[in-house]
Length: 373
Image (cartoon, rainbow, N blue to C red):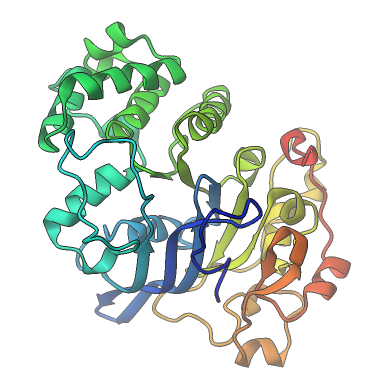
């Protein structure tokens, strides 16, 4: 189920440059009742300086995909396949400033083949991650300043240079540097802690920022504010952002592409305008039809019938067929590949009956941020 193009240079303005390439990625956990597959043969290209939103129901594999990008799957999980990182020829942090990641002169890095010390450098200096729950991410006995100092020292970076960069980050994130740095975590609001955590993740100027449900515990106003800041951070610092969320409407105006996951794999990928206004997969259309809205009638909201698949017993054929209203015998036997449904917008869906889905499975966008797509 390949998405995107092979790694290419940026000499052609029309050519997209792949920064992360995922192929045949699988994560399994051994359980008393069998092997649980929580990431299932995922193929995906992530482009340099794009914002990719990964959405889906709880338990669809979004967080596991995020962890796989950094080879950070917790034991006893087993990650297999290939994750290839393509660093830029010249980084924003000099080799004199930090113990730079050693790509051994290659233009690509096999993430799953790195030693623990190499992974440590990769995870902060090249690809950084903001996990769920900013409330629990800081040591409550340490002031925020000490968290930054500890991280900078751990990577042998030049303190003055890095703290100058942090001041720039704080300005972009609308944080008062002096107030936040001298505070303990409990003295900050949830939104301030989340923004400070984003700055900490960017202290060594990585190329990629992976964010796993970073705004889930925040109120709607702060969620929208952080979304706007992320867009500015991408533009100012040339970041690639992978944003994991269950909320389609939240990322409608943020993402350059949206990837929809179901049953531990991507079932639809495309730019927001094409995917939200003309979704091709029955699951995506059902997901959009089930979104709550203050302006829509209750009878317009249709919950998705059935339940998500058991990771120990994923259905054969199309994993969505037990819940799909247009599935047939073919869907129960054959596993559909991601195929183009809109070449111009790189819109792909893993379904045999995309035309039928678009005709028979109606939905209406009620969220203003999605209607404007």
